[in-house]
Length: 611
Image 1 (cartoon, one colour):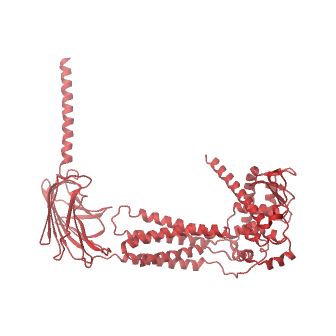
Image 2 (spheres, helix red, strand yellow):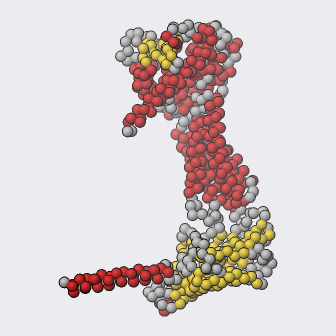
Image 3 (spheres, helix red, strand yellow):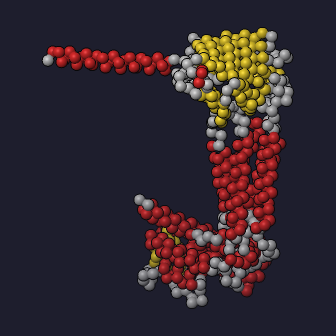
């Protein structure tokens, strides 16, 4: 028993010793030069000839201890805000591939070098781009990149400078990335325009950088990427030309003569004006229907408390009315007893059902190709124009960062392109709905949308300006952007029949806006009910207040279909005392309340549906 226990203890001791030995061997391997990459880098001999055109001819002789069974070793040439060309390895075969941040040079190792020291003779040329800083030129490059992931036993760096190189500001910076290690310092010496740097036992990620501030214009004939700005301008010129061609081919409205009309076109109901204009039916159109039915004597609207309303049934719509008017009336007053009112809390669901009925009927009247509010071709052309302008704005960011050393080179351009397309859509949407918006609200909405687009475009132009230090091309690009934007906004052509009808509706809109007292007085003598006939159209045009002001000093009878019963006391109509303007404000408040209640009900139903 004792012998067995002793054997077990010995076995555990041996296992523990073996585990500790393996652990320390791993530590030793991790600390050995080159073990992380599978080889040991003994000597790093770097020579660079600096030329006046701000280019360097680089020679790197890397002495590596080749492990057994190694047939290839990969070394890296860092990328940056410069051009690296003519990468080659003297003696032996090699392949060069481009990775995210480096050029990977895979060097074939002969079998005879296994277990011995082998010298990789790497040559390449680095060409820097023209510096647009007007204050000074500079020398700045890494003689030893901190991206090296293996320690180096011996570093020997020799840099040959031009004979007229000013050496008074020449500096060297050396250190290990991410640490404050001071035990590994490189020696730095300048003599006869030759810089000599040496260091021993350099750890991984240790970098050596040479820096000098030089007189402006010292570099002569450096690579010039000013062509990037010219290319950006050409890109936008091409986008502008394409957008103009699309607008000319299929983006223009048919030409119609502008006139003024005191009455709406025959057969054009006020509820159809919005759909005629933009091909959409809105909650506002249902409110217009209620006003229309009140004016026609089919219902009465009662305001019994601030922003509280009831609807009373007066009589059935005429058989000559549009089918959707009669259908909507039946839906709103379905199962309502004689003399009873439809309360606001019950109105939402009834209006929702009426909304669907009206929309189907109105849409069916505009299905013909000739009555489309927007032709299919113009819709497609507008989308193409949006995408072209958005991608053009993003391309400026790509071109301005073409020679910048950034890992996420395409993230910012993509975001800018998407933001540009979104802001273009905002501007187009504001313009498309201009006839339904009040003038002030339209200006605010359009101003905000255009400002957002200007901000995105200005950012792209600013990024280009940072590289060029010249505002001419960036400003030219901004001007072309806004021309493209305006053509895109206008690229929404109507079908000919729709354009003809819309022209007449616009004629009524112009009359409401510009009619004189004399013209109105003349019409009232022949048509005393004229104010109320045009009222629902004025409401659809968001011009009801302006329409009311034209009649405020005329003898307009108060409406029998709109009554006030505030604070529990029946009142004489306020119109009797304050006229058409006061009534217009009451009707506007009614419309806003109904729209708010209806939209609120629909939002609540959506939330319940998606729970």
